[in-house]
Length: 211
Image (cartoon, rainbow, N blue to C red; front, top):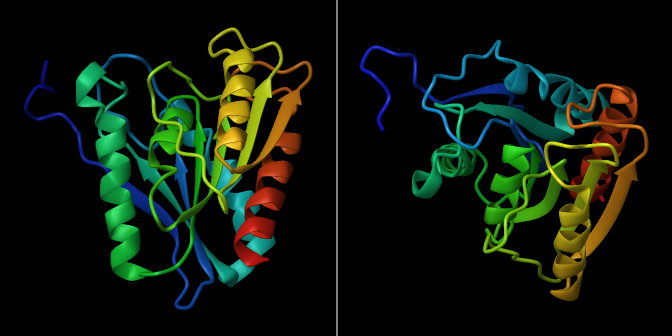
């Protein structure tokens, strides 16, 4: 199924792009299993990632470029994997401007699934997966030198924190430096303890890229 003609289906990037940063953070939003409906900037999954970008910007200043990707569509969409295609496009734009800089990927839910697919990219040094959608058969590209933060609400009924914990064990077995952070009394939307999520992600990303 393709998106009907005339719909807003463009991917887009927004954020801060200083002249000489030490690294780049690419922030990826969530979505659903299926859906070719467009994702405007004001859609909930997209807006949910704005405070994470702001928290990183506040902590890092001009030392990091922080950009958010807006996908074309809502869904993962089976073998088309449309958000993965969009994220690869975004990485290409980042590399055009900041060739050779280390990249941190921060993704929630479906965006968390995307970051595990892209963790094997040579310039990706840091991966943050927040309540990620974890599927058997997806890539598990752990390696020495890769730093990973996995955060998941213990009360999440949309994606499974137990799968995220097992993902961490697999990545660690491959040599990645993994931090597993279950968040008590928290669901999928990361709203009950929002400041905790924002602060810990900002601390992890900046310490990883700026160490």
